[in-house]
Image (cartoon, helix red, strand yellow):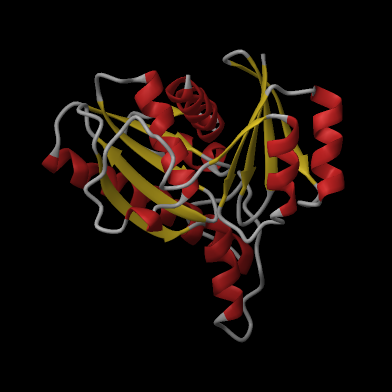
Length: 244
């Protein structure tokens, strides 16, 4: 069975192609037009689709997916394998719901802290009783780089690079060191705070900036940049089964 998992984030629109439970391909959409999504349907002929969106996407594609596949739109009203004491569940981002579902599916008997590295850094803690307790949000890497340029008169927009020193020797390397190492120390510090409150939990790092941050952390982590897509697949399966 082919399942297409669409993830519309603030930076990019992506589609993960699953054959059974196996992630076979990860694609980037040029836009959210009906024509673009229709081309994916023709190419892969999926039986199921799921859409996670944190943007104001083109609503016409929902009608297309409903008409051609068994479709699920991820929201706080979706059937999920966890509970949440959050006061306003409708404010939980679809991407965070997917990440939490992924770790419950993969590590159901453990406490899990999932750290998503996208436009924002999200910290998401779900306990072994499958309660999504909550977490926190802070600016992501690209946002930090752009903020330095936007809120100053002369600092440039800098891109991430592996080859940066601890002690920057020019404006570019000073910014890279400050942003990337600053994020790494922030993440380690947050993990350490969770350790003071909880025992024996897994730490998962996922998202587009995982490759930059994973090797800089002192805490032991599970690095999986595709975790959100595995969570979307798990949610699709869960909702399909609850209907039958």
